[in-house]
Length: 158
Image (cartoon, rainbow, N blue to C red; front, side, top):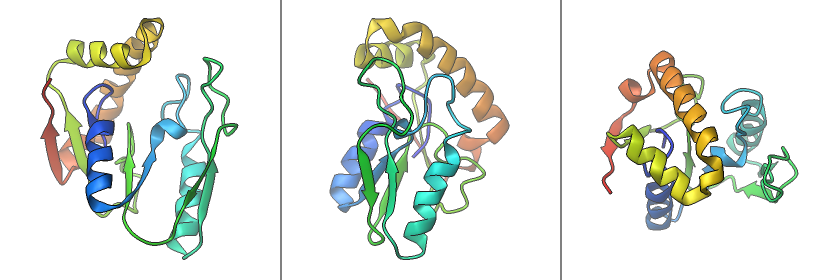
């Protein structure tokens, strides 16, 4: 489940995970303001490779408790090798993700409303980070063609 920040993908993914009794993994467990998509991807792929081979996948979340990212120093997450796994978050449905069974792109038409949703959720002190993040997202989605490749596109509302 992919889409831009503030579009509602985390909320939608949580609801879907509950309905399907699925495991939920978020790219927010990995990404940082300075590394939205790249350096952390192999850590996630390693955990998913373990699951693909019938073993538990494990990783440590990025710890944001001090107000800045400490990569791999947060809580450990265990991914069981059975059942449905929902991967949600920015860049989760990237072209390089060859393990996807289905891609859902969650969107919201107003970039300003998405910005305000994200700031309301994470705090005014994060506004400038989200503005930079939105610029990065626009470029990423254009090059990756994420929305065009999605199996389903869901537009959220307020």
